[in-house]
Image 1 (cartoon, rainbow, N blue to C red):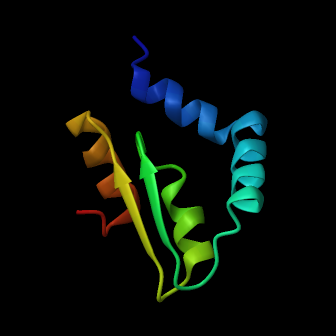
Image 2: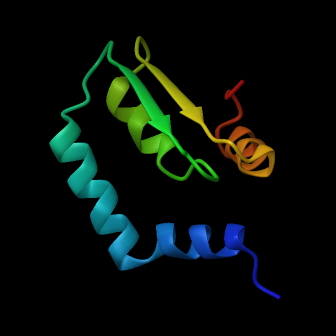
Length: 81
């Protein structure tokens, strides 16, 4: 049985999801040293591209009300606390 987690991961990997990420990054204009907050980050699929855009000196914070999503984001990024 598919879970909401599976749906979010499939959506992020789809053409629509990749297009959304590209548009979001362009519109947000994230650059080096920025602090980025992703409320409702889900499994964290957007966090790595945000971190790439913010660079070494930037900070990306993912927040979600579902502890399972936070754990998936933590596993995906390796640094989320």
